[in-house]
Length: 291
Image 1: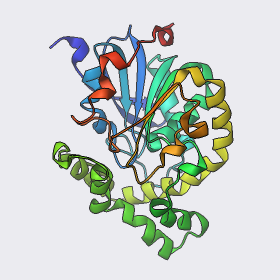
Image 2: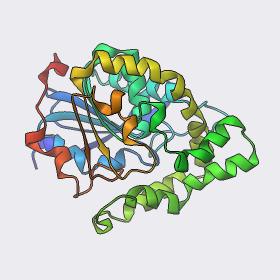
Image 3: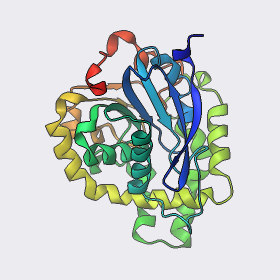
Image 4: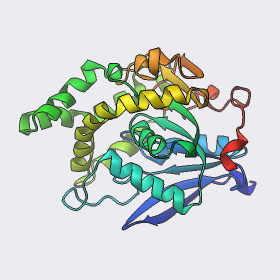
């Protein structure tokens, strides 16, 4: 197998913390950063990374508190998406990545938006799948118990929020809206649930779900950013998703996104049912992010 197709699994120290990241492709190629969502890790990109590595320098990290990155107690670290974005930015700086495209999914978009707003010129393109950018994107059936926790953090509202940490809820995230569930391997949700179920990790996830409320104040800035940078943003969404609504993908229901489209996709972009994600004819290589 050529070296550029091999996925390397590495650790890097960023500040006082240790992050796992996956890396593949030539460092001379255009950079693309893959940012995972809840309840996953860079493990969700294990099939996508080699599919991109012949054309891109691919980096996918486990967010702090997720996967195999360090996960200190909530008493030792305050988990916010600002903090996760700062660590991700620190990792990219350490790797010498100055300009990059990013593929964001679910709360990976919450991290990605902060990277883009913090350093707009560093981001050459955005590909978003089910990455919410507007208040209208919140679907009430899923978010109502989480909003209850935002407004009043007590044992009752925490119990409602904890339902999203269960195996059934995580399995649902993979299979909901999937035309053929047999193409999704059960090891995906079992792997994710095992990591979320580690001692004290539940407290980390609850703190981050609470911090999702901070996005509401971010959305006006993000709207301006997407309108100003409309030529470099594109998106795919799911017509059957029941966590984020498609109208939350971009301003005016995505019309500002240059290559926005809704596809019959589930919440995860890396199973065999998603050939269009890596279709060689559907992506144009942008060398500008390595200049």
